[in-house]
Length: 167
Image 1: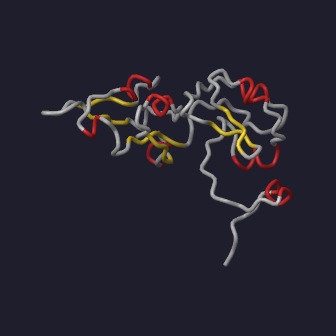
Image 2 (image 1 turned 90 degrees about the vertical axis):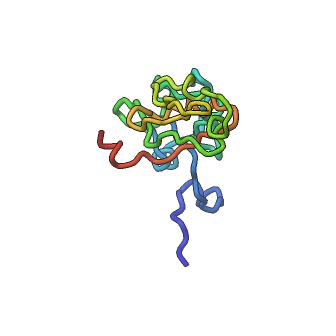
């Protein structure tokens, strides 16, 4: 049985490799973070929306605290070659509204749509119940504003489909 590849950081710290589902700051990847991040915390200090947290010595975005505005402060604060040179204005994921959504349970709620700065979540009227959320993946930049705005944590992240990524 083969093991998952281990980063240098994991090897030197003695931590076993594990599935990592955290979201990196815009323009960074797990590979560049593992190779070059020194965990100085400058990105965490400079984030104006306060969503960057050091988790296991690497920066990770916590969308339950707010949204990413793609301001570039984390990139500007970082002394290491962790971030891509190009400006990043969307993530490789989009939001997905789950079945625990209040509107899908028959309770009127439009919190996610109101919190979405891209207006990617719209509400479709239906007879006999509250409007239902519909996500336009082509408009969603993955900022996480809807996640923080959802009172029941019904919104998750999923990889952007290839059709949307090409748009």
